[in-house]
Length: 339
Ligand code: SAM
Image (cartoon, rainbow, N blue to C red; front, side, top):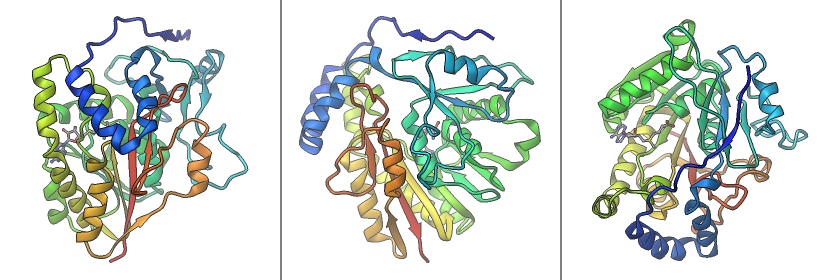
C-alpha cells in the first residue's frame, strides 16, 4: 500500500531545433507573449506535471489517502463548491500535484483492474465538455490509446460507448487499455472498431447522442522532441495535410450525431490552422450546426489550475502550459447539431 511520488530525473530528451524554430515563428505570431511562456514549459520536461485519473471500477482502498499524504489534491472537488457548474456531480476523480512528480504506472495483470491512469490533466477538458449522461450513446471517433474513452466511463455509464481507431497497432493498444480498466460486467457497453473515422458518419447517420473527435494533430509536446531533424522536417511537411483530415473527421462526427446532439472537437496542438480554422470552416460548410460556448462557470472553476489562452478568433478554448500550471496544450470546441 505504499506509493512513492518521484521527480523525473532522466536526462533531457533531445530537442529538435528545426521544429522549435518553426514553432517560434508560427506561435509568436498567433499567440504573442503567451507563446514565450508556454515555450519555457515545453522546453523543460522536468517541470511537467502528471495527473492521476482514478478508476472508479477498481478497488481504491487506501489509494486516495496515500495520494493525499503525498500532497495530491482532487482537481474537480477543490474547485468552487458553491458553483453549479457541470463538474459538480460527476464521479470522475483526477488527482494533481503542484510539483512535477509522478507515481509509477501500474502493469497489466489479467483479471485485475488498474487503479489509475496517468495523464495530462487538460485531456479531461474535452471529456468534461462532452458531459455524457447515463444511458447515452457515445462515439469516440479517434480513441487510441483510450485515455479519453476511459475518462468518459468515469463520468457516467453510457448505454453504448463505441471506441474507434484506424491504426491496427493503436487499436490493439486501445483494447488492452479497456481490458485493464473496465470490469467484465460493463464490457457489453463497449464496441471497439478498426475503421477510418471519416466513413462512420455515412455508415451510421444520427446514431449517437454525443461524439468526441480527439483528432490526430501535430502534438506540440512530442514533436519538439523528434529524435532526428529529418523526421522533424517530414512532420512539418505532413502538418499541412492535417487540417483536411481534421475537417473530414469533424464532418463525419456531425453526420453521426443525432439532431440535438453534441460533438466535441479537441487537439493537443496550439496551431490555429488545426483548431479554430478547422471549426470555422466546418461551421461555414455544414448547415444546422451551432458553436456552443463552454459555460463560463465551468471555465472559471478550472482556471485555478488551467491557463486558458486568449484566442483570436475566439472559437473554442485552448489550455496552454504555464509555469506552475504546466497542463496542455489542449484545444476544445463544442458543437451542437440543431437539425
Ligand atoms: N483519444 C485518444 C486518447 O485520449 O487516448 C488519443 C487520440 S490521438 C490524439 C488521435 C488518434 O487518431 C490516433 O490514435 C490516430 O491513429 C487516430 N486516427 C488518425 N486518423 C484517423 C482516422 N482517419 N480515423 C480514426 N482514427 C484516426
